[in-house]
Length: 423
Image (cartoon, rainbow, N blue to C red; front, side):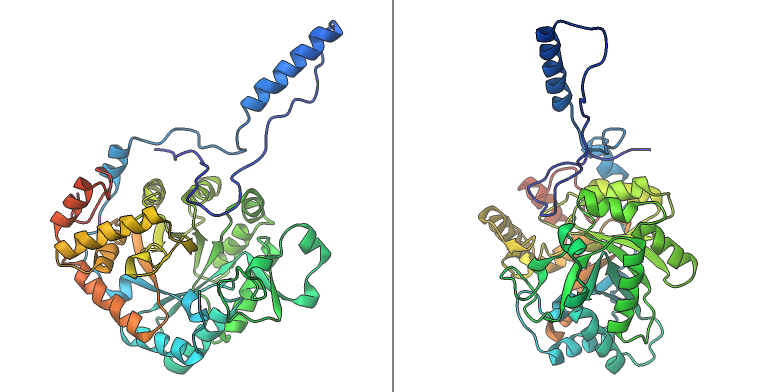
C-alpha cells in the first residue's frame, strides 16, 4: 500500500493556506539554572522547534517513484460513449464570465438530453443558485419522465437571505462577498442580488444546503449525489471532516437513509482530496470530482488517481480543457492565462494539427484514459458547444499513438505520464 505526496504549497492552487497547527514551546521546567543560560537555552529551543514546525497532518510515507505510479495506473480499454462517460457541467448555465439568456441555457440542456447526456453537475455556488434554478426548469421542460437522469449538486455553502446573515457568520470569515454580483471579482454577473453566500460545512449546513438545492431544482427529482465543495483550507476541511458534526458524516447518513445514492467530493487541490480519503473510513466516498488536476496542461492528480484506484473510488474528472484554454479560452484556474501556459497551449495545438486531430479530442482522450476515471465533466453554455463535445468524444478514439510519443519527446508530458494506448 502506498501513501501520498506531502501536502504541498503550490503556486498553481488558489485556495487558502494549507494546514496550520504548530508545535509550541510554552516554557522550560527543570533544575534551576543561571538566568542568562536559561534564557539562551530557551531561545535556542524555541528556534529549533519553530524550524521543525510542520502542518498538522502529513501522510505517513513518501510517494512511490513516478515510473512506479505510471506503471500501476490501469488504463481504459472500453469504448467511450456520451451516456456512460460524460457529465454536463452546469456552471456555464449561470453565465460564467458573461451573461447568457435563460432560453440559451434551456436549449443547452435540451440538446444534451437529446444527444445522450444523463449526468448533470451543478452547485449552489454557481451563480448563487442560478445554475440550479435554470437546470431544474430546463429538465422540467425537456426531460419529461426520463428515468435515468442523475443530478449532482454540492454542499459547503448556504445561500442566505441578507437578513439571515449573522455577525457570527461575518466574524468567522464565512461570508463570501467576492462571489456576490456587487463585487468586481464576481465571475457570475447574472447571480441574484437578494442572497449572500455563507460557508457552512457542518452537518446542519449540509442538510439545509440539500433542502435548498432541491427547492431551486424544482423538487421534482431527487439528487443522485452530493459533493463536498472546495473544502481546501484548514478551517473548511476540519468542519467538513469533523466526526458526527461534520458535513461528510451527514452525507453518509443521508446515503444510508436512501436520501441520496452517492457521497462525493468536489475540489481543485488533489492533496486535500487525498487527505480526506485517508482520514475517513474506506467506503465513505463513492466518487470524487477532481477539477483541473488531470489534463494536457496539468497532471498533479496522478497520486490521487492511484489512491482512488486502490480504494475503489471513482473519479469524475473536471477541468479537462484546462479552464477552457484548450478550446480557445483565455482563462486558466479562474484567472487570465499567463504567457507560459498560453505558449504550452499553442504547442499542443500545433501537435494536434500535425496529427490531424482536434485538440479538444486529444484532451478528452487523455482525460478519460485512466480506468479509474469513470466520467469527465464538460462545461458548456450553448447547444452548439454540446454538439461539439459529442463530436470530440467520437474523435477521441482516433487520436494516434504517435501523438503521445511526440508530446513526450517535446516535453509536453513527462516520460512517465500514462497516456491512451498504454504509453
